Length: 321
Image 1 (tube, helix red, strand yellow):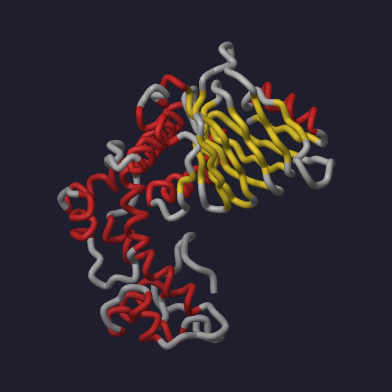
Image 2: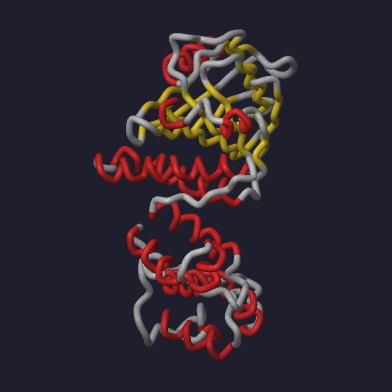
């Protein structure tokens, strides 16, 4: 794990030189001259690293190529603020939820227009296929927040960055491979040549994101997922198993019930029929039966004082009352 804090532009320049990208850091064109920056990063393995970065407004530039610096591909996913990137003759601006791609060795300009935080994944040049057309086409282009492949990757990077230091060599290598596949899928989707990731971890994550995006559809099933990805229902089940997940039908049911319990936890409780419809259940009878089997009480009794569970205890992933 690499962590560093800067309280001046010179300190941030030194941190960039040693742990990020060789850059000259200067004050913003307008605004306060004081500065604070933080970076916490770790290598998942020798191919992929993940960093959490926060910085006050500043301008970071490099006027030419740096031949002796490692050639690395960076994907910055913004959590807050706005980042403007200029490279390869293009300029892109990314705000919260959006992402932007840039390369370490070529001429580069990064401008934090306001206080900014992001998660950045960095991939070594040998693994990133930096000479490929997908990378060249993606440099300094804003990747919209709704992009499905970006949403899957973003959901993976945060937890991975926090847990990477605790992974052993074998799971770290598998996680790194999954990130590389997700990044490849993202780049392919930007160029209109979207391909499915081939590894079970990345493919299962992509399928799970599809399920979560369509939970309200009562017709959603394992067969729906299979048709979306052009495979058989048996193959979907095998992908989930190889990635270490419960069967897809179980995942779908549990996510629907978790969403229902969260809705019933609110101060202004909707009707049981409304909750069933919004969580993808075809009717209230099916919803009530599944809810009681999972949580031990009916939806109507959920959260009421003096109504102890009468069925299976809630697992560690279940919603709190």
